[in-house]
Length: 116
Length: 115
Image (cartoon, rainbow over all chains, first blue to last red; front, side, top):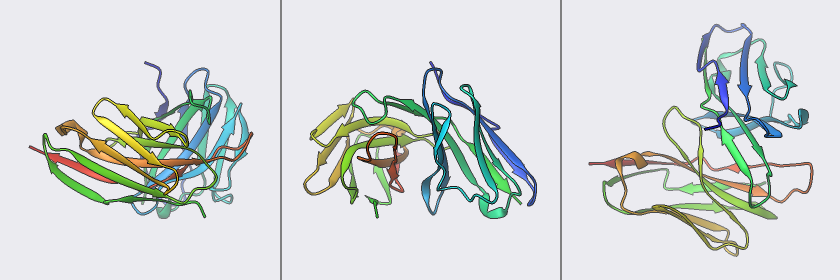
């Protein structure tokens, strides 16, 4: 079965360190999302791409977060420098035909980030 | 502001019993509504998706209903199983035209099914 692959599964780091999370979307999906999930806020959109072009990154703290899609098989989310308040689960999702009755949207298993 | 409110926040039921989860939303204009199941340590998995013109949709023991007039949806689980223990998230997509796609997530209902 096709699936969205995220690495690493878990990441523990110290405040101030750079963190890079990677996502391999499902082949053929033209839209990729990055979400953050916390107990208090639930799932929040950080950024999303369509056909590798960034469409919305308004949910991201611009001073420390950056999202890129260097090619169709890889999306990255980088935090530099990381802070304890960034501790959360980060999900990547990919999809196509979004907004139609046949839409497909799949989530990865997430990266559990802990910043000490 | 677009919002999705879910109730109850958590629920414990006995195996084999039925339960209903609620979702109220203020998203307008409205495109579609989804219910996702999220197991602990996993990403959300889609259960149902309904457009504004649909009233009900089933997926096995899961049945979702939608009342677009009152902006309410429910997810009914029949003959619950231990594997139904998870968080159930209601997600609403506003109609935002070509080039934009935003989902508004509820905070979920945590369901525990006990033997």
